Length: 446
Image (cartoon, rainbow, N blue to C red):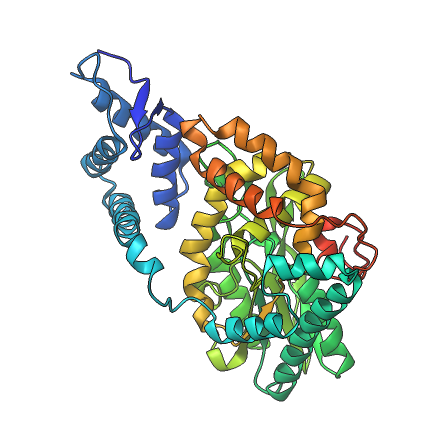
């Protein structure tokens, strides 16, 4: 029996085979249908490997598709029909995405906030900030502080308008979600929104969704073996929905507490009941995810979506990618607050992005209001802070078939930053700015 050591990726590259990837694929499928038995996932993965190795010619290297076929077979033969169905559906979903990606890229998407984009583009054009060349010229003219002031005013206007709309609907609203993908600026936005709402006489109670994480040992993992906090399956969605529903109905609930040092959740730790006129305020990656608040009428919810919708063309004529802005933001924040090497953030980003595309982006057309957290001045700051690192990463990943995604992202961002004039002095940036959440020095986020 020949030992399985390599696998052929869809790109044709031959890479080392890792047992952990099979375990994670099976476990993720189990989690999606309510199962959290890692030992069974490991046993099933070993059955998959045995089946692949039995009778395999010594020089034969299986493809990703070959392995997935065997996973389906093992799941069904061992009585895991629900898990097998979840695995098949996800596999089919990914296949359709690959087959239609070029066609989708050429047509209008229902998941893009077009109205907000048109407004943001008009704002940028009217201030000569819609291209990198124009941004550079304004910096040469010594206008960086003015750019900061203009961008911050637009962002703060968004928050103020959201607060006014909530005030108008306050008699019906029981719950306000501030949602958006990773590093979109949810924390700062939520705190500033809460301040606006208090100033106009509304009473809010913040609820920390992070306390609803499952115990760490029950979390799904990514292919690097790291625990995946980006997926909604990492949260006890059923309990969140139960508690939110009861709170909005005026009932008392006992909140859990999650100890991040030990990775364990403790149930029934603190009581909470909304008083007359109080509204729940939640900052969550997955606030738009329907199961999280399925028991609450849409009339009682106000959903805010936040994204850095920067409308600026690079020298290649392509618009700056919002996900690239968020990647750099996440790198800076991870390095400052989580002792996480920015290189690790880059290597894991395709998993973050995959979760966004599956669990966040599809629901942003259900939002009540969109806030643009993109700042026209952030790229010059990133040029000073991060440019040299992207140059290093291009060299590091260029010949590594396992890091194709990291190489492509690093190359794209390097080319963009290469065309930007750097700004070292960030003193014009207010200390309550959403950017301070990432570059440091925030007076409201700790």
